[in-house]
Length: 105
Length: 105
Image 1 (cartoon, rainbow over the protein chains, first blue to last red):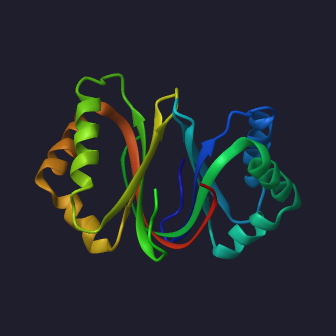
Image 2: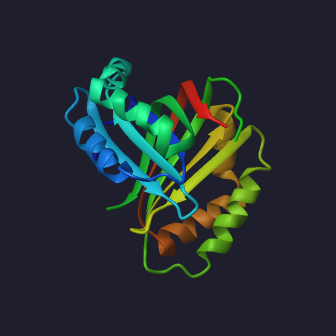
Image 3: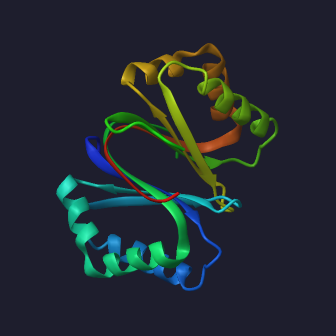
């Protein structure tokens, strides 16, 4: 995933999944697709371990872009479902990326 | 994982594992243990998916604390091994956490 040079913003979402996964995969895929259509979207990376701990990081040009995505009505509905059903807990951190390095491809 | 209120720093490490995993798990566990002993260390979260993409986020009080850990001699040796053997590519981003939210436990 190629990103512009810093500064830009990262939303670090760390979540523990509950036992109820019904409908989760479809909604997660839809949110990934929808986020990519929003103004200021730069990219997305996610990994989930066997223990149910998942980390998803989305990258955005500005804090306003993050607020816009937060307010998106379909995203808000998905968030409600997440709290009611799919996640036992989560943490979300908004961070300004100041430096980046890469190795390999 | 309880963290202090922002601001603090996050190092977002996104890596694609190579086919050579010999010695990787031991070194990763040792690095996690060693990082936790460094000044300014606040916490660590990691997840690796079945596709070999892993995301690890470590949290630190200041940028200087991050630099100190980067220069640690045992960490530098592990990084060399990572480039030679365990990772086909990785990206590392240093970001200042400005806001955080949480849900659940």
